[in-house]
Length: 100
Image 1 (tube, helix red, strand yellow):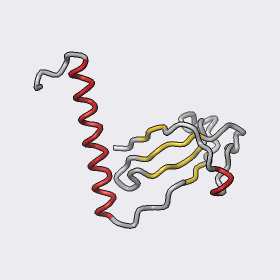
Image 2 (cartoon, rainbow, N blue to C red):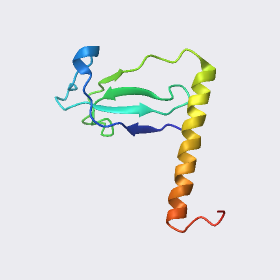
Image 3 (cartoon, one colour):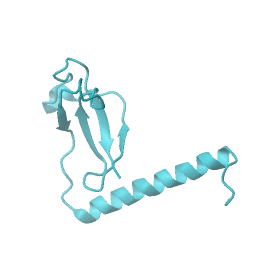
């Protein structure tokens, strides 16, 4: 399952050689990948990526690739566990979870 989450403003561009704008001229967006292959890695890209006609294809990893498979698996498992617990808390808050 592919998942991305927005991480807010991006202010490291010049220092790391990453552009602040994409080829469209728009400010790039920054997200965190939560895929099995790249858990927790931040990247920037064209904010129009969901629109095939407007996406310029700009993409750049911010973080280096994780070299250890065990670490990748643990990071993803913790992320998924945290998200599962947050979902339960939200359901309890809405009175929709009967198991607690």
